[in-house]
Image (cartoon, rainbow, N blue to C red; front, side, top):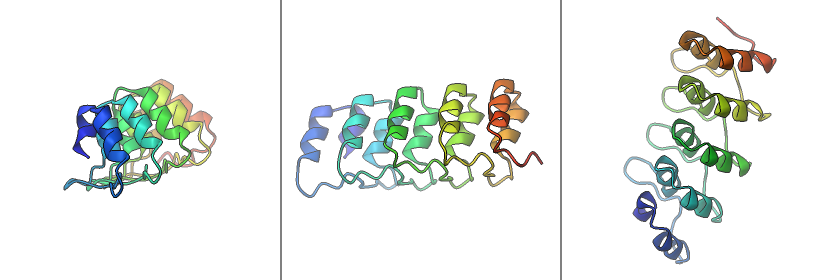
Length: 161
């Protein structure tokens, strides 16, 4: 499914229409066509893949990263919204370092994305990474006052350590 990486929409449509094509096939790094489309900000291909039956939006690569994590650190808030709109995304999946999409958004100072994630009922604002840091600790340590206020306003933060 390499064409997804290069934005070749016509080829991707052709492949998806072919019997036996596995839309969730992972390369040697564990990356899927959806991850590649997200990583490169290919919004049209992300929409196409999300509309495909059987696409797994929660597959993790060998580092434990998900399409949502890629979208959060990328430049496209629209792609974050597209993934969240599927209602199939597990927003609390952690990568091998214990980071979550919320932690990624906090780390990169993406206030709008933090707001989007905090608006979800299931997001756990207290998950710790492998260094025992929570999103609140990360935001505080980086001096992101607006994000600290957002996290505290959720009334779900129970640990400051």
